[in-house]
Structures are given as structure tokens and as C-alpha cells.
Image (cartoon, rainbow, N blue to C red; front, side, top):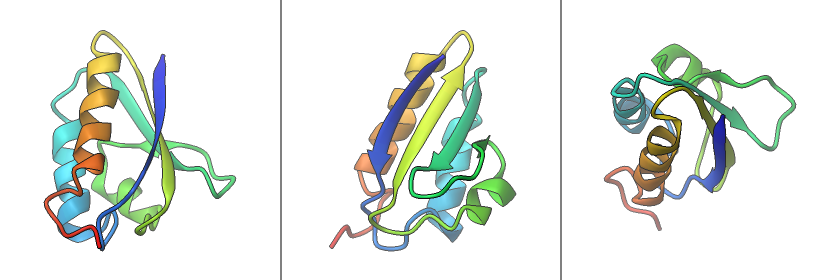
Length: 93
């Protein structure tokens, strides 16, 4: 298992289009990938499911933990973290 923490910096967080882009990227990997908010006690959810990702209500400034387990786990987590750190194509201010 490989995991990393990242802060969401784009203005709308992981909602609508940015959330869809995130899920689309996660689906490219064979590993099982989960996402969870660090400011809540909820269990991690499937990062390849738009319904689960949107249910987290991740907004700007929220720290999340991404974890993957499988043959491409490190590549998956690093790719998703890079996507989030890039601002998911949105303004970050």
C-alpha cells in the first residue's frame, strides 16, 4: 500500500467537473484507490466512483489522504496528487 496526503487548492474543490476529472484519472490505474478527508472520522471511499468522491464534500483547503494498493499503486497516488496540486484546471485563488 502506498499513501500520501495532499491539500485541495482549486476554488471549487472536488465537485462537478474537477471531481469528474479526478475520477477519470483514478480509473486509469489497476490498483484499488481510496480517498478520505483528514478532518473527518469517516472511512476512506472508492476514488474511482464519482458518487463517493462527491459525497465527501471536499472543498478548497481540505486535506485528503489518497491511498492505493496494487501493481501501480505509487504511480496512481503520485498522479492523482499531481492533478490536485495543479488545481485541476481551475484558479487556485
